[in-house]
Length: 267
Image (tube, helix red, strand yellow):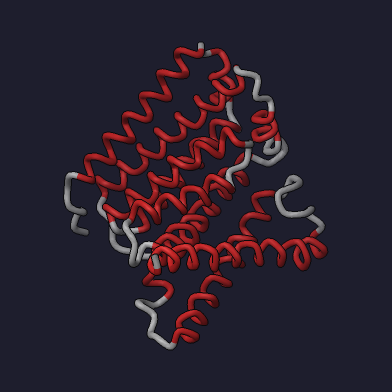
């Protein structure tokens, strides 16, 4: 029980740093730039970037202070904690295709839910209508990389040190899901995304592989949103959308099983 309490304690510690970062943005940054409270307005990508950077800085401070208070040496430096290990080209390309599969799943699921009358999902994409395409897509890649450094490189790595990986994956998946915009339906999709990140990270060891999945997913999705590709899914039948979603899930499951049956590739 002590180990699981430690896992939850680590998650609470770094979640508190995220909350503090949001407060810093609302109380200090917003009065300067007048972009609106966090999560509102047309400058959402810039808001997210600032909150993520501040969160990582505060997490570094929390990481350092925690081990000083415990009077034990940290298991690694804050940077080494993230595991920026070398990667191989074949696996890198594979991770991009996994990100593509999740983008297709995400889009198909959104359209299926819209067909069922869940209109709140329209607000999710509508909030990006006034954001220039290049700005949105570039920020999607940068912010996703920062999110994964924070959620996987810091929070997940700290939490999984002494507990089975499943439980650390479950909690980080719930945290990622809770932060998903678009209502409960899209938050439920955040749970398998968190498990996908955690599982691939555990098997492939380097955070770069996880960043490739996340960045390709978000860049492809927002590219679709800013082009006619996203709208073209409106013309697809529910059965077609379901087949695309199921095909994407099967591909991701096969990819996960493949790495589960093999040792991590040598860099």
